Image (cartoon, rainbow, N blue to C red; front, side):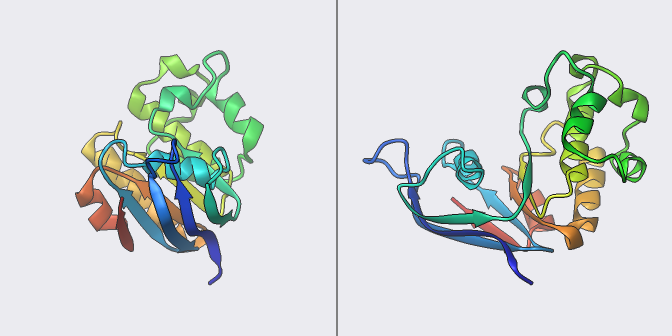
Length: 189
């Protein structure tokens, strides 16, 4: 299978004197999950910013296929004044909405609400739903299940893994048990 992400020999830091990444490389193919683990401040979220081209590396190359992202904080993922359904429809097709709603244990009527009317767990599942409906080749997951209880966490990760044939996933997590359970490779930074 062809690569959907290629990070090649990337160097980056917020100052030239302290590099978060020095000649860092990682690649990902459809059907793969790779987990990025490391201490707070190690550069996990910065790596996503580099992949999304929100930051520019000092050196090296990054290429990626179409991507969508699930952020760690679901409340910052949605505009507070619009319903979730409006915000999802703005960026994605609703073609497989019913199937995905069932898979992540979320009721349609919750999508008709404003973000502050949902719990953190419900809002995080809505964020995952939106990312999946965008049908990306690459799904960037930044602590996507940290706001979920263990049962829902397992259901959501199982659903994501069932959709691996259509995409590849790069997962940031502090949960080594989760990474060991779902990832083809764990990268410690």
